[in-house]
Length: 468
Ligand code: ZN
Ligand code: ZN
Image 1 (spheres, rainbow, N blue to C red):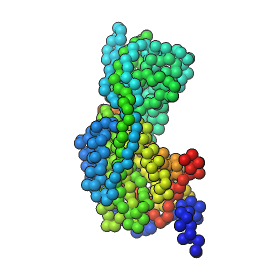
Image 2: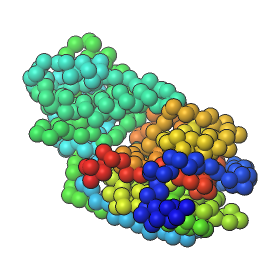
Image 3: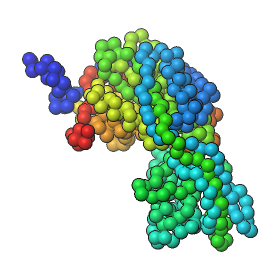
Image 4: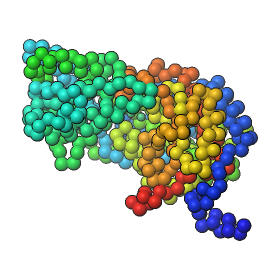
């Protein structure tokens, strides 16, 4: 019996001995969570938050003047929602700007094309023959030097899916396509938008150029424009002109904005929920990711309004610059690595505002029963327990790779890629009832984790610690 205080003093409770002690959630907390769930379903805080962010700030490209206003907005909103600790942590990154873009078909079928520059693209005007590829693999298989002076056009059509799984292909076209095109000698890169809509609205998003390559102007066509260009290319050699005015411009500093509801008995232990505050510049960042900011802020707010706060603190993070490379999530993990064990678990909402349909955590065996208890409390919201699925959200993933246990609340993303990174990502696309269901799920989940008797297995991973 005397061994236990010694181990506590040595901070060894998280790993070796946790496995011998099963984490459980007290019945009183489960009862309180049921009440919280019903209150959240009838509450409109989530809607009010996303209405405020998208109306008062609108688009908030990382490092822009609007991004700075969003940081001030988030601090004020946390305070207004009753978070008793609110602070910011700086995040510095390269700043990219979009100033304008235009493209047109040249020659006998001359006509304008609707495009948007990919984030990270350099400025430049290119004119040349379009070479059509069905997908990224076809471009990668093209002979070296075969695209010299030409413009590569990758025409992959993403398929809609509830879990958004085909973004793996759409996203890869965007992130790897430009570098593949440059290797073949291309002067420019064009892609069918990574999207599932049929509107004349292109989808932007970050791209990367591999080390050692000279970047070329890179853009996405709207889906109807990709159809049009494919038909023209099928008729014979087709040339276009594309002029992009955009590019990198030094460094910018933004902030992770953090609000906390202090726990009543273990205030230094936290349940981390969050979303990213930045957005692309074409829409107003409603489904990506104003919704996530609203869902997690509202969940924290409702927990803070309960008769007594949970045992552990609820920490809500509005992450800086997710869009251009998880900058906020990486900065958070670096800053808080020493407190990794103080984090029970982390979850990010970053897949729109559709209803949550599945739940899981990455907790080890000793906390599976607690995960099942949470799943049971979520079931009345139409959420199923998916014990073999899930993973960390984008801004949680850098910390999760170091050992933070993830929570996963899967949103229905059937229409997410109709809107994602387009001018159509606006408030009217959010269903207030679906948003409230998300708030209810996050509130119940975060509250029960905060009340659990025992941990969820967050601990530095041996492989991650070695690379520290
Ligand atoms: Zn996002
Ligand atoms: Zn995004």
